[in-house]
Each structure stands twice: as structure tokens, then as C-alpha cells.
Amino acid sequence: MCLAGWVYQALVGWITFIFVKALITVGFAMLLAAMARLMLGQAKCRNRGVAILNAGLAALIAIGATHYYAYVWGTDEYAASAEVQAESPGMTGSNVRTSNGPWRYMQGRAEIGWQIDGDKSPITGFAVWAIWVIEAGIILVAVQAGASSLTGNPYCEACDNWADFRMLKLKVTNAEMGSIELICMATSLDDVLGIAKNYTANKDNTFVYAMTCCHQCSNAAHLTVKTETITRDSRGTENTKTTTLLNNIVLDAGNVEQVKMFAHRFNATVAAPVMNA
Ligand SMILES: [Zn+2]
Image 1 (cartoon, protein in one colour):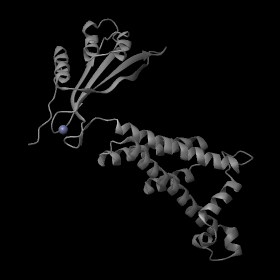
Image 2 (image 1 turned 45 degrees about the horizontal axis):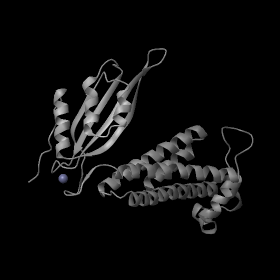
Image 3 (image 1 turned 90 degrees about the vertical axis):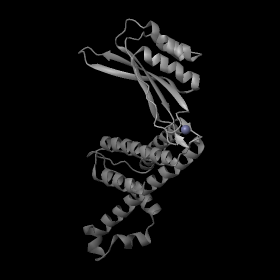
Image 4 (image 1 turned 180 degrees about the horizontal axis):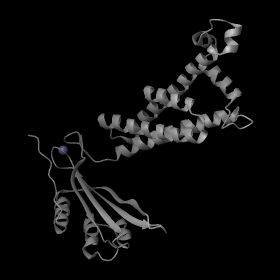
């Protein structure tokens, strides 16, 4: 997290265009979210509260790191400037830092502000703090969202493992648009799987059925149903929009057999995990 903060601050310090900076902030937030997910996944964290707390702390460390490196580099640059060297030769960044802490540096930085894209009046004071708060907010929200989405993933408590073995991924094309509402309102697995029996017409609509289970014991099976809709603009360029209709519904052994029968109707094979003795 600190290393990511270092790279991030190096990039935003180097690039002056605010739009590009904003893009980098979003990219940085997404990178941290992916890192938080990876770490929490390794730690097998299934508790949403714990995940959010840990991810929040990690995000705060990263945000702190970006400001710390801005402080160190800013004071180094200041000490090395011609004006300062003329007044007090041999002045170094660490001399500046002994008399000015990071907090005072940030206050000074906010007073001076930023010159944006050659504009006449720089952004100063409150606006600078507001940008820092927005920047921190984007990072915190992204990391929290990444962490909390992980905890909803299927898990096999018996084997103490994520249940992410892919048993089946079946795409049913030509599905009816009206089927989407039917799947969303389904009260039984029969409803969910029954839809595709009568499929007709729309070749731009695809249903994607994905079933996962535990790597070791093939229990903890879950089904996710998504729809992919192709739209075309006036030039005929195709865009595919994916919507999750049902996310990780829990399947018992009987349900798994139902899904297998369903898959066989479409000549899809259902993989079985390699069991460990
Ligand atoms: Zn298991």
C-alpha cells in the first residue's frame, strides 16, 4: 500500500493536467481495491464488517503515504530551490522537515495552491483541502466497495476454502427479452431454468448461467445468472451490456442435479472438481 502510494504521488506530481490527475486517482483507487480484495481473499475474510474495517485502514495508510511522499519531495524541492540556496547555502530537505512537520507543510501547500493548466488564478485554500478530501473519498469508497463485494462470494466452511471452482458456464442465446423479468421474479430454481425452454426470437439477448462449487468437496454450489444484451448504434457498432440477474444463489445437491440436467439439454458439460483425499 505504501509502495502504491509512492508510485501514485510520483505520477500526480509529475503530471499537471487536472483531468489526467483525476483519471490517475480513479486508477489508483481501483488498483488499491484489487490489492485489498487479493489480501482479504488470501486471508479468507468472509465477514463484511471486518473486510470493510481492514480495507479502510489499508486505504488510509495508502492515502497517508501519498501525502507523506508529497511532503518529503516538496520539502526537498523547496530546499534545493535557487532562492533558498542563495539565502541559506547547504540547506537540505531534512533541515526543512525538522522545523516544519507534514501538517504545517500541507497548510502552506493549501495557501500557495495549484496553478491549473496555465490558468491565471491558482486554486487555493479551501478548494485545495476539498480536492484532497475528494481524492481520499474516491480511494476509500473504491477500496471499501472492492472489499465488501468479495465477502459475498461463496465459501465452503467445511473445507475452509473459497467455493470458486467453475463447474459450468453455459450461454443460452436467442433468449426472449421478457425472460429477464421472469428470472428476476423467479421463486424456484424451476422458474430460473424453465425460462430457456421456450426461447425464441431475439438473437441479441444471451443468458449466461454459471455454477461454482468448492474445489475439494464439490459442496457449497452456487448459481449466478447474467444476461448479455447486444445493442447497435447508428453506425452498426455493437455494444454488449452485461447485467447480473441472480447472484450466487445457494444450491443443494438436488438443485445441482437440476442444473446438470438443464446443461445437458444444451449439450454443455458440467466439470467436477478433483477431490483431495
Ligand atoms: Zn468443501
